[in-house]
Length: 333
Image (tube, rainbow, N blue to C red; front, side, top):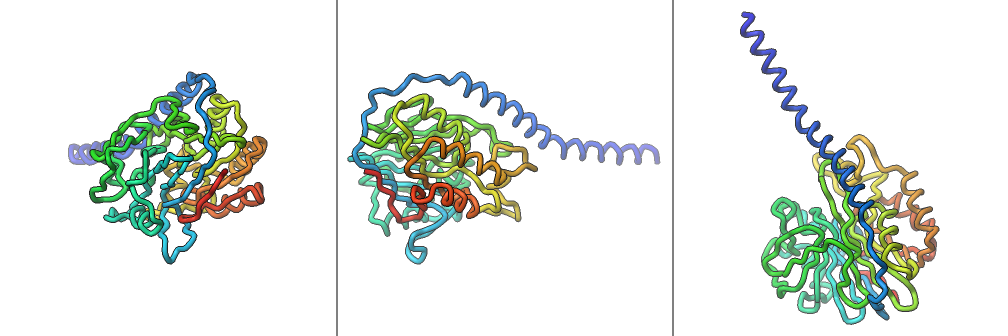
């Protein structure tokens, strides 16, 4: 009898231990990753980029984001894909979510409706390797980046990535520091952040120098924080900050993506412990930080920020604020 009781007790202890190992591992990884990310940040010192040139005209056309200018005609989803035209260079920035794994994907369907073809695109830039930016969950699992679930001819165009990813139809190039991609167009290089569940997350931001105006930052999710992104911009450029366009991850009052009842963006993408949340105070601090830089255009992506955060930015920046809507172009010239 004692032997049976002992076996039951041992089995229960092993079950408790097995249940505890994943949280303990994730917690240890999170703490070590935070230290590593901070060490990488502190060691990152780059010279000024004095001769990258400038563009006369910059346009950003959202192809994928949460809201659409005409929701009866164009599709929204909690992901990002922007068509960037910098003078004669055309860039596809991120590839959306394609949550259902469709072919053609929402991105391809929106491209067709907006008259956008891969024949006209010169390069792809991936901000970071999360599923809502590289084309879906399967891509995140397999280390791929694709605009749709089926084959798309990308003409072996260069694809600038912050981490190694694969697409046989493209030419992947891993960016490990600031790099000029075209005249006036710069990847500011990856800035890493450790996320509790999603792990090590290097993210690169595009900086476009617009003649006579300054530098426009185009951001995927803002995981490194707006403070570090702006600090990297100020390290690289003497030109003033002119615009901030894209995702900054402020899902304060809700999440665009809910899976099995879990508000995914509030839990998985914040860089905080799982029980902590981004607050209204965090948003107000970010707004105050950005306001001091006096940008002339601010546009916050709704794919990873709630309506309360959008309203807070809209109120703070007034006429300088632009809504990001699929199919509605933002032009700086």
